Amino acid sequence: MNDKSAVTAGSHVSYWTDSLEQPISFSPLTQNDGAQVVIVGGGIAGLSVAYCLSQLNIKVVVVEDGYIGSGETGRTTAHLVNALDDRYYNIEKIFGKNEAKLIAESHTKAIDFIEQTVKKENIDCEFTRLNGYLFLHPTDEDNSLQKELEACLRVGLDVEMQEHTPGLLNKNTQALVFKNQGQFHPLKYLKGLCDAIIRKGGKIFTETHVEKINNTGIITDKGFKISAEYIVVATNSPVNNKYAMHLKQFAYRTYAIGMLVKKNTIPQALWWDTGDFNANENIPPYHYIRTQPYNELMDLLICGGEDHATGLANADIIPEENRYGLLEDWFNKHFAKGEVVFRWSGQVMEPMDSLAFIGHNPWDSDNIYIVTGDSGNGMTHSTIAGMLIADLITGKENPWEKIYNPSRLKIIKVGNVFFKEFAGGFSAYIKDKPKHADEVKLSEIKINEGKIIELEGKKYGAYADEKNKLHLVAAECTHLGCIVKWNNDEKSWDCPCHGSRFMHTGEVINGPANKNLFYFDENNPQRKFNK
Ligand SMILES: Cc1cc2nc3c(=O)[nH]c(=O)nc-3n(C[C@H](O)[C@H](O)[C@H](O)COP(=O)(O)OP(=O)(O)OC[C@H]3O[C@@H](n4cnc5c(N)ncnc54)[C@H](O)[C@@H]3O)c2cc1C
Ligand code: FES
Image (cartoon, rainbow, N blue to C red):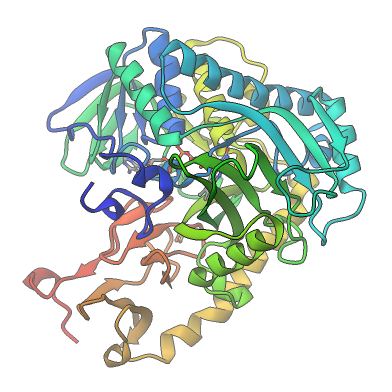
């Protein structure tokens, strides 16, 4: 690939994107079309839904505005787990004991489904079964592993406590071992799903932005229509839902580094700590680690974490680009020292009650479905979405329907999380707002710097690129009008309110916004900035 950053949601390139020769692309849509089901979004959620439906001989069309996997799926770390990051002892409290069993079962079945699909479709994506080790973060309660062990046994998972953890420098670390977890190369898996969908007569269009979605189908920004009986919106953060879902989930940035270590010096496994409760007691950011074969001499250790609410990194005084250094320090301390050869970040949607939202879009026509609220378990949540939405569309009963229903509201059980995350984010946004708009003038923007400037009461986002070319956008997010913030790490404008993101030239890269920021272009008289 010539410019790999052009195919992904930010300026950094993940190992997965880098290791592919070509982006996974298809032709853009250039005429009207029709299908039984149209699916918006070519990440793991959209393709899992499309794959499951196409296996039932239902005609599907997938429409993706970048390339396949160019959203968060190309930026993941692809642990395939039934070890949920919000802990089963919490899930039992929120959903009940029987429901917690069904939830555990759904994630176990999702890993099995991926394994069977890999075999059935002959997908060469390095799928591997392995153990996962959960160990205590020093800020967590001492008995948290024991509580989780008991809850995991109640929900029927294959777990045990061990006093030694392979891979960690301190081998005497106690860990809860989750057996039979999985990992794969996410983009190679998506390529395999695409091939299988096409073999069943499905169609996939890339570089095709969906502008309008209604109960008759979708319309692209070039004015082409795909008529369909059912519409599934799998855009990670639903672009067809303005309010309802965005009050029930919060957008977080999360960071990953890939470090080279000598081959086979670290065992193949997954590791997670239980999360930093000092950083955020409601949604404690945790570290997640896996290995990945790199070449004949070296393995890549991929380590993630250091999350923060999107657009609010400065609220904890650690700007986005400084998060990699923190990850490296943590990694050196617990695992190994090595050369960091990859750095990238991505976004996860944290649902207030821990589980994804999969099903009918609230307050919408009966034939419109969504998948969102991926949390740190988006690989399995998206696979569950494939199985569940196929059942919902074909009218087959599914025991997971009620649990994942996007209309559910657990306000009594988790209202505290909602209040703290929502109010905390809002107050950080307000505190930051006047400061960054008042202090800077257009002439003061330095190379490689982005700032919000204010002129005659209107706010603009100004970024001077490495050649000192100034890029100016209207700073009001096209979702609900919050003022965006510059993310100097991924060179994007990020919205602190619900996580929409835009390129420095204003193109939208993450929902819920679905429209670009207005870009002022000195070469285009209609878009010229007159100040
Ligand atoms: C660093 C990181 C590590 C992670 N690690 C793990 C892990 O180890 N295990 C795990 O289970 N999960 C993990 N996750 C979460 C997981 O990666 C995501 O939940 C998952 O990839 C989301 O898939 P998706 O299909 O919902 O979204 P995406 O992959 O973002 O796909 C949505 C697609 O919709 C497209 N789109 C948006 N708007 C439009 C439009 N208007 N028209 C057309 N197309 C549109 C986008 O271009 C995008 O490609 C991680 C996430 C990150 C960022
Ligand atoms: S994402 Fe909602 S206002 Fe920006």
